[in-house]
Image (cartoon, rainbow, N blue to C red; front, side):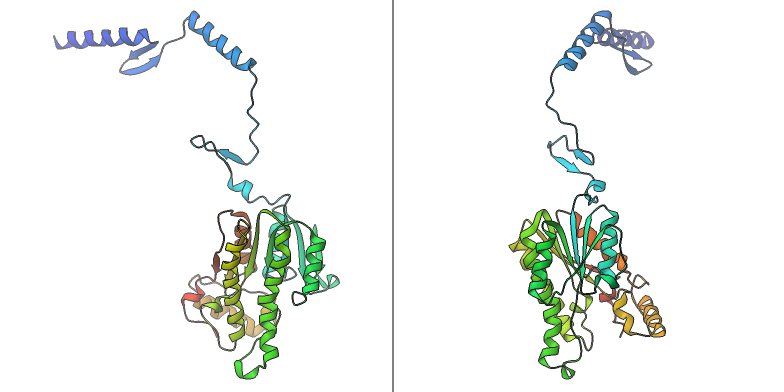
Length: 317
């Protein structure tokens, strides 16, 4: 009886599903082959759809469509593509700035490298426009951006000026770093901002001494802190243009060339022993952060710390 009932139920199920074009085989639902009539109707619908005009534009390469909201989002690869964008790096002749010049060029950007060093003293970079600028001279900065024209991203790494202990400096020496770093960054932003295209960005560079001051660097610390305050203020004032800053710690660049080779190697070793990541920073680390800030449209007013955790532990003096 049970087998008979089960068989009857199965026959009933097959009969009912057969009316909708489905079959049940060993508990699986399968779509039945289309009848000649249904095949003809399907062919007619397909032909009609193919003949109908469409207003759908081809999707731009590197974009994705959210089918729930209808919005079109760039892929990560498309965001990182700087082709057709102009990047200006002030301080681009060495260290972190030079590393960013190379990175932006590799991503397809039209790059302008500006710095105090004469063009004849620089290593030529393929496809990079080399320009001389003095960030402590307003006329020089104004002329730079007038010659550049429209741009998409500005990075300012330049830090001219003299540092030293409080009791070893006079007012002119103390002002030199504040003028070079803070007002130099301000002047670059002042003359770049009117020429920045939509979704453009400005990125400054400060240093870990803002949160862990070092002996003999009071004006460096003060200037860096002022630049970070300027970053927050301009992010609000210039929006939707984006303004950010990078806060690196020890980065192995030409800045440390005043040390002898032996002293510099010893300093690298002590940094690697002290920093949580157990390595000294490289210019490419900062360049990667700069590219991130240029290409992420949702980041502004941010201080991006690239210190290897150095600011969390005792300083290397």
